[in-house]
Image 1 (cartoon, protein in one colour):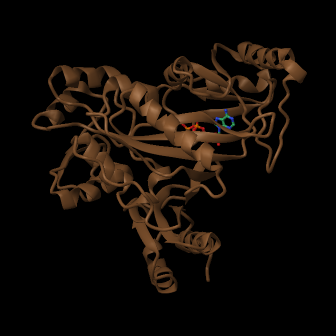
Image 2 (tube, protein in one colour):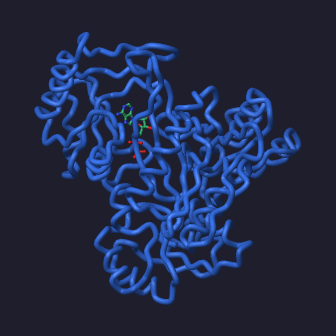
Length: 401
Ligand code: ADP
């Protein structure tokens, strides 16, 4: 596996009962997975020679991030090493411009978007949206309706700007109210994608896993709540989600996995919206081709976790059952707080809730950094949510009793 973060650590954990020998290419020996994997190579995944040397003797290569250069992946394939997901699939998770173009081509609903060249072009993009909206019957302004809005703006500002490569956890995303505010994203010299700012009801995620011979499974669609651009809470399944929409979202994710020939785990981040007639719909925000934060609940809440199924898919083994074990599972991320010794909080958390599942990543505690997550489950959503939030807050130090 390339990448030494917590996703690699948890993937390794899932491979242990299957007796899978796991080799890791990690940036540093302190990385989350490097602490627990015995066969670790420390090196730079951007260096082809390092990758080639690492890959020698591996049956298959997979990743815990999307940043390995596409041309290096092609070189590994040319050397005869299976790369899963392969470069032709992975490029859609590496480059938001490529992803949007492909999703347009296969008819997947996305926010209105286009690549923009400079701040003046951002203003033009905003104006195009207004013009397109005005041309629609009834003015085209699908104003907010239902709880919390969810309507689609016809155009104008604000506009969302994203660097097409290299962003994560909201870094590389700007919301701008005018062309004057739009200078920053262009400074990096990376192409910039402009998108309408969707006035969504909430964020959802559809997680699916697909194997090389085409077997695929879908996890229930979850609600994903972000704080400051970082995933905070995931509720499985998404409460109150229209049944037909849930099915459509699962089918959409399975279709994307098939069309893009994804092997392994695919997370499709979605915006739930309300159409002008009040009916619910979804737009695709992002794709991730690896286990994903919106699937962490499955470690304790599903019959087969996303990590176990990613391992199975990468090895072309039959996939496991993705169905939930409980009515509700809630995952809350544990972010680093002001005091570094989280272990001292274990006594209270474990004593308060014997059903609580704590997953810590062995990372140094820094304010705001994802250092672990907790999972709780049960039949009463309010109770499950309270228990998860209490535990995560206590571990972080924002709750003290
Ligand atoms: P990253 O690659 O950093 O995860 P995303 O594209 O997922 O970036 O965007 C991060 C967050 O910004 C999203 O979870 C969402 O809350 C918000 N966001 C992104 N695109 C839009 C959009 N077009 N309209 C409204 N909010 C958006």
